[in-house]
Amino acid sequence: MLDVKRLIGEVAAKNGIRLEPDDPAFALVTLNQLVLEETVNRLNEHVSLLLEQFTASLSKVEQRAGALLAQQVKSSRTELRTELETLFEFARKTPREQSSQLSQTTGRSLMYKWMAVGGMSGILLFISGIRVGMMLDH
Image (cartoon, rainbow, N blue to C red):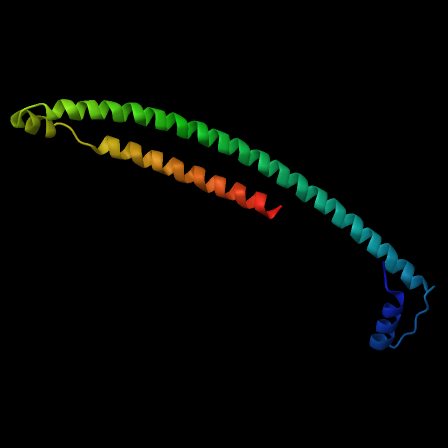
C-alpha cells in the first residue's frame, strides 16, 4: 500500500519535519487514499456504464442505417432496372426518335439516386469503423 519509510524520508528532506510510522498524519494519508480509490472506482463504473450505453446506441444507429441503406439500394436497383429497360427501348428507336426523346429527358435523377446510395454507404462505413475501433480498444 504505502511505503511509510520512503514517505518519512521525503517529508524530512523537503520539510525538515521528522515523522514516526505511528504518526496520526499517516492515518490521514491512508484515509485520503481510501477515499480516492473509492472515487476512482465509482468513476470507472460510471464511465463503463456510459460506454455500454453508447455502444448500444451505436448498434441501433447501425441497424437503422443498414435498413435504410438496404431500402435505398433496393429502390435504386428497381429504378436502375427501369432505366435500363428504357435505355434498351431507346436504342431500338430511329435516330430521329432518339433525338426527340433526348431533348425531353435527363439522367440527373439517376445520378442523384446513386449519390444518395454512395452517401449512405459512406455513413455506414464510418459508423462501422468507429465500432471496430472501439472493440479494438478493449
